[in-house]
Length: 115
Length: 112
Image (cartoon, rainbow over all chains, first blue to last red; front, side):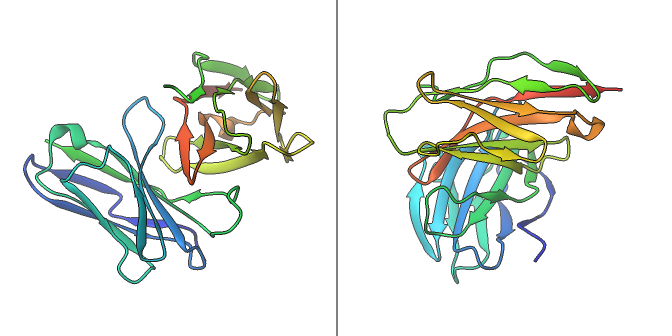
């Protein structure tokens, strides 16, 4: 297994367009997380799944954002009607469930630029 | 309120020297975990080291060690024998419930 993968790696879009990102976690990991990182900041939590269930959503996740993990494997994050403030790096991470100190392993991220 | 504080400005370190990156945290939960991640310019967050709040010994992973001072709520990362490939941003993070809260990071540049 090669770790967490994310596609696309880069996305440029115009304001008002919809975008969708994909995350494929490490195969045996049943927990999947989305974070957003803006320039000069650390990542901020958006949401996470255990298998197909979305267990927690941050207040950062406005109603223009939706995340799914329909079969408990890969996940998608969609942003509708993008705004320039959505420009950021979107990071996905995964881990096994169980002990809470289990490490979250991150993918390479998707860099979004909204023009 | 800021849960993780990393306030050092960008740091330059000579190759083969050691560098210490400061991290302080704030929590009232007796059970928590602390992590350090490295983020090179490519953007990927690379896990370095973990320290649990109940761990009796400071964590070590190769050239990385964590100086955990629970009473002071600090979890400083020490990188020994710096290499050019260590040039990156370094983030301290704390597990709260099942999410990670990150600091703003420390920039490290290793010079030959």
